[in-house]
Image (cartoon, rainbow over all chains, first blue to last red; front, side, top):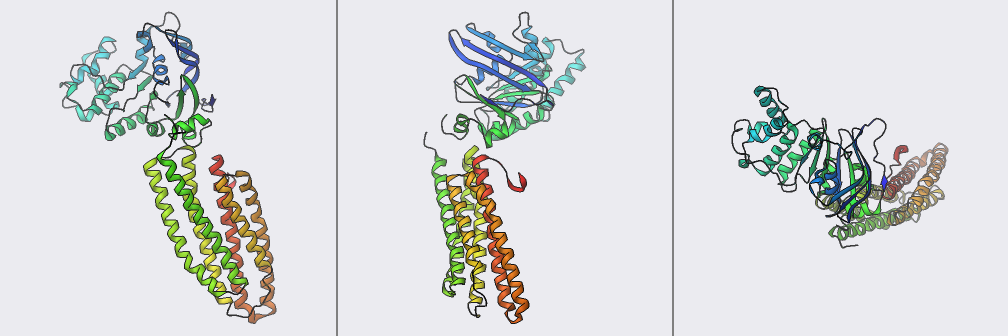
Length: 262
Length: 218
């Protein structure tokens, strides 16, 4: 694996993955992945279907724990803490490392309650006024506030697909995460809604570390600082996005991003 | 390798720029021949064919933009389209210099020959060699040869300075030959500029191959 994309001295690594293997039962899905994700950058994972990029994304907040036959070897350090160490508070981990999925999945509740839910169950707020403020902040940060501020009590299902996806981002932001994982966040959206999500990602990286899985190569090129290319469970190349799309080091990467296979 | 839509378009684009390169080479060669063999008909043909070269440039421009917009090339494909889009106007300008030489030839051919065109054929030969080698290096994506061609620009510069001084002396010695000598000075300058442009092409060849910018010391 070539990697000229390691953080330099001036950058802090937010997530450091070392020698990660992943298995579904006896089936190995990821092979010896090592990767550093710098703080407040956007890192895109690309690769053909089944290459392991989503599986890898889900190892970063232990979402794979919900699969009984899944097992992990190697380490994932977030801020110098191994998230697979015994005694790790997985709920706290997932609060710190939020996730947005391909299909927006709002709760069957009002717009306000969708965002307030996580704040309430985590007991983050100090008063009703504080809760309102936090909900507003999250909706503003997800660039949704202006569109929903007059109908916060209406059902979230009344929103468009793009708005629902931004609501899910607001829901993730409400519990004050540090890292946001996005699994194909715009693949079900039209170009305008996609553009809004992409602009939001660029805006959010000022405060958060973002990891995005995408099938849309141009999206990876537009929003990410670094790109990791996976194939058959292996990390083929990890590089600065600009380098990856103009002059990749690996022949396989070149073939993939220029559409010679996939 | 699977067949891609973009491959067919890149092949067409490659054919088009090679045709333009061939036409440009021919223009330079004919313009110099028109001068040294005092063949004004040939000079007129160079001027006529420059219109075709201009059309070729427009076509390549249009096609490059279309590929960028519709195929969104990346990596080597992207570097190829960018190189073509940048080399094309360079070739067109080289052809313009050939036209200027042809225009000078038409004037000079009506005047008595004041000087044996010894240096001119050498300069022209060097420029033509460099151009042909640069275009071959583009086709073969040969960065090594491109770097060697860049070094040869000095040969043309040296010839230019020699011709310049000779013509200056001639003008001082024989003021009645000033008009003719002035036209010849321009011809020498055009050849010198062609050398510079060939150098630019070679720099783009290196970019195509290595994704490295060597222009302005890279």
